[in-house]
Each structure stands twice: as structure tokens, then as C-alpha cells.
Length: 290
Image (cartoon, rainbow, N blue to C red; front, side):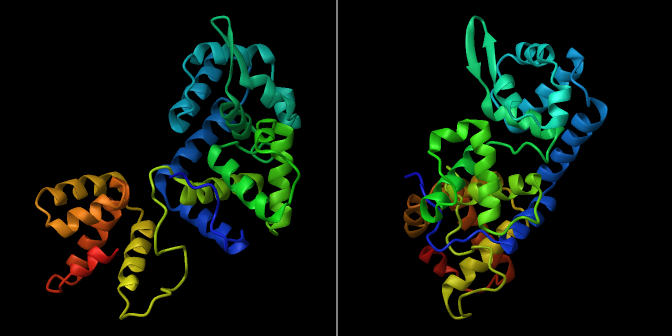
């Protein structure tokens, strides 16, 4: 079942934004990718008057962000013909719409998210990146706090999208952050709560201290999830180990696994392995209480 709202008690804050920004910086797959794109868009291939440079940028964005551009050359040629450099520098928001609509084999396709990413990587302080996770956060928070007047489908109009992002920033006192930082915060926040693979954590919610007493088994689960997140564990790796565990697991473990997605059971596998390593002689039957 897909989640449609953030937790009722969640309030965006400077502290939580800083947590996600710090998490971003310490995850090489995010930070190194961003550095590579910055080097490409704002250094090596800064301008858009050469088809080869545009092709490299389109291909890199498509690969890093999985933007599903199926005809890179046509999109690059479209951008070249628009002569976008002056408009990019000025932060012309209408440029996103112009880039996004591309005719391929006689049919016009809309690559909206790609267009916002292309503009943002050239001028990150004038163009926010549109993403479905960010959209879900904005819609969920606005349904509760009404910081802007818009319908969900209007977020596909870039002028509206930018005004809503800025209204969100103002409503929750996040003016100290740049548009780029807001991008990183909102995307990660949306991924945390709306991830379709069910990776929303059950006990850990970015608290500084364990909210459960030491004699409460939930304390183990909170600590395990916290370690999973902050040591940047790869869910795919633990998902596969979870499958191996199930081959010879007892009936209780198999029933436990049935209640969760393979990704979530991977996190449970990690917690079991973590405490098994720390306390190899303890009874870990409590894992079935997850």
C-alpha cells in the first residue's frame, strides 16, 4: 500500500534539514556524483553551443538520475537549437518548459524532470529540481499546513513549482538554506517516507538518542536501524543475505519475513547479524518481535 502522507507529527526544521544534508555529504554515491556533474556542467562543458558538450551532459544526467531519455541525440539537438545560455544565466523559468517538450519521431514527449535537472546543474540557485518524492512532500505538508494555493497537477508548471518550493522554505523557517540544499533535503525526506520499496524505518526516525529503555527490545531495533542508516549499509547486499538466511530458517523467521518486503527483511537480517556479532552467546529470539 502506497503512503500518501508524512507522519502526522512531522514538522520540517533546520535540525532535520541539516541531518539530511550531512547524510548526503557522507554518502559517496550521492556526493561524488554531484561533484562530477558540477565539474561537467559548470566547468568542462559550461556552455550549450556545441552538440558534443550537450550530448555528454544529457547522457550523464540520464545515467546518474535514470531520467528515461530514450533518444539522447534528439534531446541534445533540441537544446542546441534553443540557444539557452543567456536564459540560463538569467534564471528564466520558462526555459524549463521549452527544454522539456521534445519532438521525437513526429510525437512530442515531455521530459519535465530532466529539464529541471539540466537547468539546475547549470544554475542551482535559480532552478530547483522537480522529483516525484519532492512533489509528495510538498503535497502532504500543504494539505496539513496550507502554505501555498495549488493543485498537485500544477506542480508540473515550473513557475508554480518554484513558488511552492519557496513558500515551503518560508513557512518552515528554512531561509538559511540554498535552493540546492532544499533540493537535497526535500528529495531525501521524500525518499525516507515514500520509498516504494518499503524502506521507511520502523523504530529509528533520526533521533539523537534512543527513545526506548535498555530493557525494551525496541531499543535493539532502534539501534540496529540507526546503525544501518548511519553506516550507509547497502540494502541490496542485506536483501540477498536475507534470502540466504531464509533457506534454512525456522518457521518463526519465515513467518517474520512474510510480513515485510525483501528490502525490509534485509534490514532485519542486518540487525540480527549486528547483535549476533556483538553478543554471539546471547539468545536472539527477540528478532521475531520486530
